[in-house]
Image (cartoon, rainbow, N blue to C red; front, top):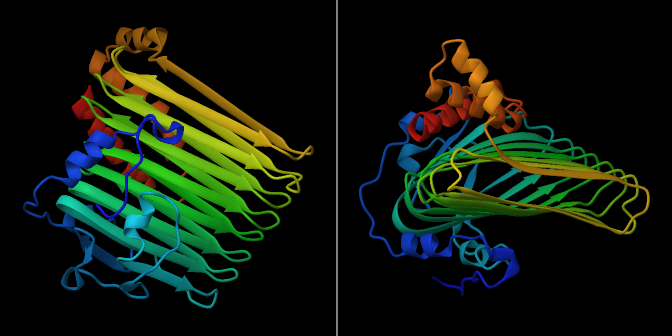
Length: 359
């Protein structure tokens, strides 16, 4: 490892499963898996990285450039990825492109990969990323959206073991929008870490997803949305489902600068315990220095509704099926926000597969 890792003694990292991260990094490499079963039925470039290394014989890159990237970041995990050979997309509004699919395959040990997404004025792009395999997979993504640009990003965390750490750093310009959705439905530990800055008038961010944990697994997100300009809007919608002795943690923060009047910021953090031995941690935060804003947050943790379970059982639905139906409805709050129908259905199928194994 090239940089010193943080510790759980630091407030921002107190829920992080750093033991799982270091164990995954020290594991031995094994046999890789095929990417074929993870492509979604949409046109466009298809990119494969194996242990953070571009696989040209398995990819059709199109407008995606794979090149060494030096990205400036102070994040302790992002630093390790900033100088590796990564991928980048630089688009103008004149370019009409299909969604970009990227499959990250890990075979063990550690791998680091940077990415840079730059959308010029009024440009539009979609990126779909899927993580499979095992080991420590570490990713740094920097995003720059110019006036009116729109980026839709969907991330599926399906590694069977190990650890996935994601660091997103975004600057969203005037009337631009960043929409990112995550699903943690694998057996790995994970940390989704982001700082998103709304830097232009009427910028918009929608950032959220669902973390599904079981056994001894731990997953978390730590997201800060910074409103630095007028009329910005942000939505953070996160759902966590924890079974057995697992732990899911959601920390979402909204910061409103002094000049960011007319800000509209909203957070919704909800956790569901499938057994009382599981743990869900929620930490919503608002830090507001402007006086003409509309900001709200909600945070709740509970169990499946006993009355709803009884109703379904009384209608002949088996207990496992009834629990699956109610849990699916709970997770749907995050999944149904995905605009691309094919991606939305893939997320739902991943969640259903997780439920079959957990219930």
